Length: 314
Image: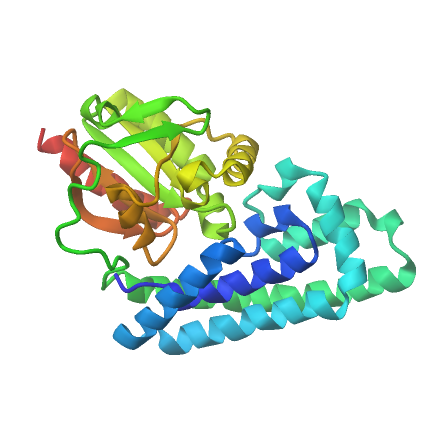
């Protein structure tokens, strides 16, 4: 699968606008973007990817980038009234973590708080929503187009010798409890999902990953999450990740570890999120990394096929 760094960086533009509005919970809706420090890393990744992978998805990615900028401009042009909308979103974190279409979510937030807006503000928001709805429909179409293209290539830029990155693993869960490679040894297969808090597709699949975890437990397996915002015991990142996981009803284990460890370097090389890998009892990654949210049924079926293939070999 081809990498999606252009798409990832374009999504980051939305988070930058959200940050300027000081509404952190908007991040879960506005796409894949990291913190300002990570943004520099992502930009470097994009430059590398652009030089080495100017493939068939360049045109769709450019269109996607333009659409996100159009949407950001709407928020910027009517910043004061959209600040009010995002303020209501921040007061309802459970709603903010839903899988609802972004335009519908915004519209429902506005309708639920209609009395808080003047007639002029409401008219402005209503007009903006219709424009955003059209943009979101085009974004969805392009994302499917890019995903279809990605399925024929590779999303991961790591070395061919990266299968054993979980050997001698040492880290902690988000509650501070020590975790080591015995986590993998006790499972027939471990599904490891890499995500970060500002990634809309990542957050969108968390509840489905929780369902998968319950199913895998019956099969002798487990789902484990790795939020790259939490590495190096980043307490702000851990707090945000825990809030999102709770809002999504996701109770499976999530891990943090040093970014300069073997698995930390592996995570740093991932060019697209969410990315999921299968890990065996010995800490080896099995097969190719899987990219895409499993809240999409076709992606879920594909991942389950890979999992079953591993289990059948035991």
